[in-house]
Length: 70
Picture 1: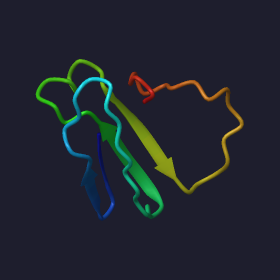
Picture 2 (picture 1 turned 45 degrees about the vertical axis):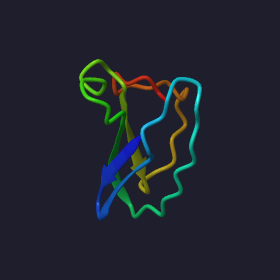
Picture 3 (picture 1 turned 30 degrees about the horizontal axis):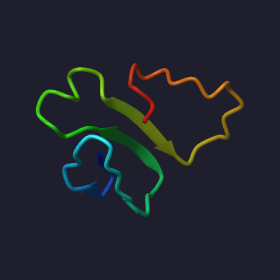
């Protein structure tokens, strides 16, 4: 998993199927892209967006970015 945005570009190591990893980041207000950096996975839809700050959401929590929501 990789996250990119204002002043941030961090990622986990490449994981084998079934493995997991923790990624701790401190994020500033802004919009971030979260995606799988393995070749071609992002283009296959393994991506989502994340917004920090702004107004509180009262929506259903549905992912409207077209990503997988992981």
